[in-house]
Length: 426
Image (cartoon, rainbow, N blue to C red; front, side, top):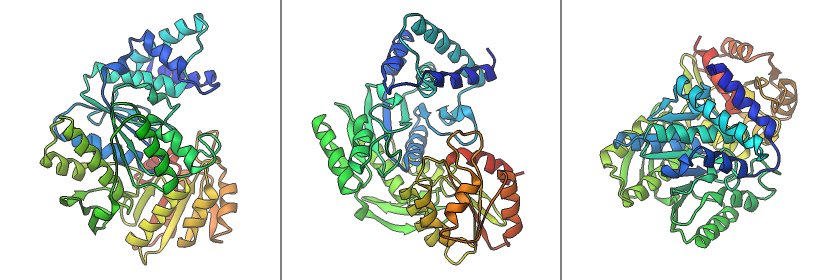
């Protein structure tokens, strides 16, 4: 099996999609020796901020001397990006070798009439195998969608269940109310773990608290009143939280203060459990955390930013960051979204801020919304919008329109930001 054949096999696993059930994955993991049971986890669920929170926690743990697994989705730059150990992607050889194990286990299951895991489930099994092989001390695991029935929720050894802000996303799949969606996210809470949550809307908070109580888990929420001394910037920010003063972070955006506070609360819980994480490691790790696609700088002259805002809450915090950090700057937007997202709300929140807006269709995604359909929606809130034929065309046109003091901001689905980054840096 070659690397491309391995990727094709994993993609083909989506032919087995059916009713949502963790049973096929559990059966596959049993055949593989239940590698997940040999690992310990920080499990991260929520709607927005999961990736940034994961990045802060895993970078600090690495600085503290631990061998740290990361499992993330979606990815921006590489397929292998989703499985990392100490910020190094899984090797091509490792991915091929472990995919062959997944394939054999799947054949055994099909022969027994036990069904077969989907692509994300197979990738999750593969990640567990890699993390065991790489002797990870701890794995920071990002939920794919929801929590309760997500493939990552087959784990047993959760040290900390971390909940980022919950908002309306995947409506109809996870639920139709905030409470129903929060119940899915809170499904990662298990007996014996600590629960740390970002500040939540009342409807979500009640559900999360109830789940933690049912499982007998101590829980805490980020105290936003204790986030102070916010020094904002595009290249560097700092803030104080609880007893810590002037914690530096390199991620931009107003929302990063709360993401970073949540990460600090998670790290403090791990410290209480016996993980040795010095204050020096915390400060160095927070400062060195990199997480592309979250109000991050793509290029300079003119300033070019990208952000994965694709739902109502993400659009709101992106708007706040624009008003805080880009006040008075002339803005050119590039927008691309998936058809099953709340793109009208995103457009309503953001479009009035731009001088010009270029829409694109996210490539290679069956859920993509056409550039023309997105432009039609955006036009309700800003008449200066055009549909572009490709990401390359959009980047070139944005640069043609932008003066040296202007800002280009690309946002929407994370799925197109990798290609956009490459185009912007050619």
